[in-house]
Image 1 (cartoon, rainbow, N blue to C red):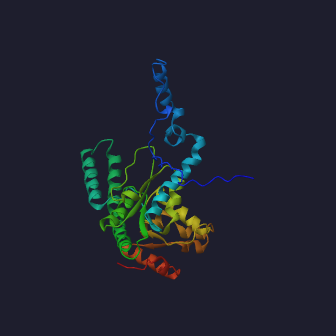
Image 2 (image 1 turned 180 degrees about the vertical axis):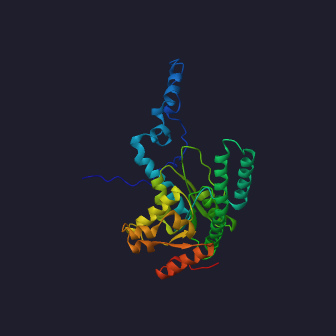
Image 3 (image 1 turned 135 degrees about the horizontal axis):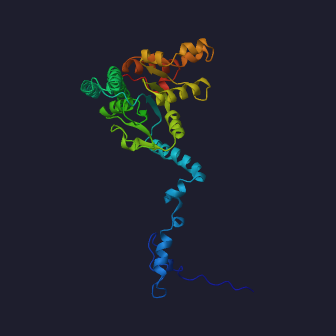
Length: 329
């Protein structure tokens, strides 16, 4: 017959929980091999520690820059800003593009004066033609500096809406100077959050000073930057600009044209500029786009007109109540 042991009168003692960080006795690997055992051991260990192969993978810039780790870089380029935008509850953006060269009016006037003075001092020299051309361009930039103030005012309007009834929608720009600075600045001046999606270029770039620090990002890849521009975009506002502005504008128009992206408001600011820069009617007449593709955007001249027209488009699309952008400050 099997004998059943009697239950002890007291439960066996349970050891105290181990410290999550510290041990009472260090592990052998916590100290290098003593020099008393090998006089060269410490030098060898130092060499090993500083060897590139010993670095943690995520702390090894040479490894992360290799061709074979491009997939990891692409993932990180996307994921870092994505997680931050989620943490800050950014659901929608109003994206503003435009030239980095269109500065505020006071600076534009200063540049005209400077260009004029240089031309006057170079009269009769071989440099006079080049300086005259620079003066003419400076005058055009001054004439177009009105767009800086329009972008600034538009940033204020969206910022005011963000502070009241539409907290999930913020201004987003490329983070640079010119029109991008103006839109960020307008939101900043009314105490509203705003986003800057900066890009790393071969020459050092500086973010404009009006971006919200926790929402100021830098991308390695243009493709991932473009994805973030459009992923939350509820509207695109394109001011006069050059290659970068045209690139972003036609990217959006192509995605909407092909319905790879749900249609959104696309507003071109400055009809006289855009009709000369791109002859959309000619493209329709030549049969390379359809008449309905010409209806994917419209023109506006003032900040209030931009803001109200986006509101009107969203109401027509039946999204005004859902997106709550119908607040007019």
